[in-house]
Image (tube, rainbow, N blue to C red; front, side, top):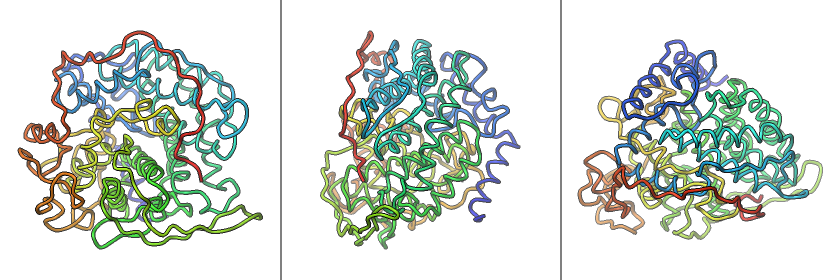
Length: 535
């Protein structure tokens, strides 16, 4: 077993033994009560949901402390949370009373009918209603989320189709687990039946892909295929308290043979502190998808005391910075990469990507707030390109806000609301200090692989304040008037003027958060195609 793995497992054991997670979440519950927010139905969310389990719950993309922070900030009308919440309440999927349409078999890519759009629309409605419930305390949204999830766990038995069935399992598997994690302590949620669905319908398909890659050469499928499967298996492992599944994903992230492992997805680290993202040689949409999925894997692991964000000297930070700069129109290097293709025992071939593909600077996905806030706020690292692209994408929406086809539903989104955090200050600022693993607000105890040094980001004066750069230049973000460091994702009192100037969004008072659509909405008809997923 690798030394890194031993450190990660011992950190998680230590956290459980000392009760650090339960104590931190209990503190968060007190904050929420002070803000006047209704608590989830059933046992208190804090210690109750974590007792007798191997992992902290809630503990996928959002911890109890994260949810309490969102509720308190929105209640106070704080920017940018208020704008992020307004984006959530305006989404048609976030309305209570959404009626699910569960299917026994979901088809994607082939089969009849191709009905996977029904699944992803229902999954996003469940997630958005559950998240909205935790922010404003309206139990009608919790009721809606539970009804959607219960209906699917009572009927879904299989995922079928072409190779795209692996994408359906991975994408919708991690997403539906995250929706369920937000209501798992509700008395009316069928927890055991939902676990059965995850472990018999979604996870086996993703596990099969990571093991056999659809009987293809291991490099036949691009990075995002592995990452969807990894996200599903990790989310299942955490949700179901299955340490073996979690360990398999951590091992694959670090040492997997497929293109989703971190060194294969980010094969070349440059002297400028940026690292080439393999799928930049393919196209922008797939590269953005991959960065978002790797961030999702890292965030879910982090919330259980496993630091993949910092693995291999923060290799993911360097790759995300590269994609951010490239997506903003900046010049990036790209080392020619040839991958083998074909079926085992069948046809074979190869394909070479020789240069970074052209980009559309207006293309965006709701992926940046989570990644930028981790590195700049939790860890105190300089990440100028992430900071700049995150500010440009603010406030992030979610499923249904980025187009009608499947590509617009690949991420759960709403990162401005969910992942904006205050910068860690004091002794732990540079090293990601905080309250400990599982809280979502600090570095997991004992983690030490991420470094605030120049090796984790562009070094020298240009990293923090590119001399003479202006908004829109390729060098990096200009320090805005009124800002303290050019970190436009900051939300401290001293950073508010800079943030609003950069994004054009002003703080919303609590009384102006009624930008929502009332009443029941009709589900859109199933659509096919449109996702950034093909081999």
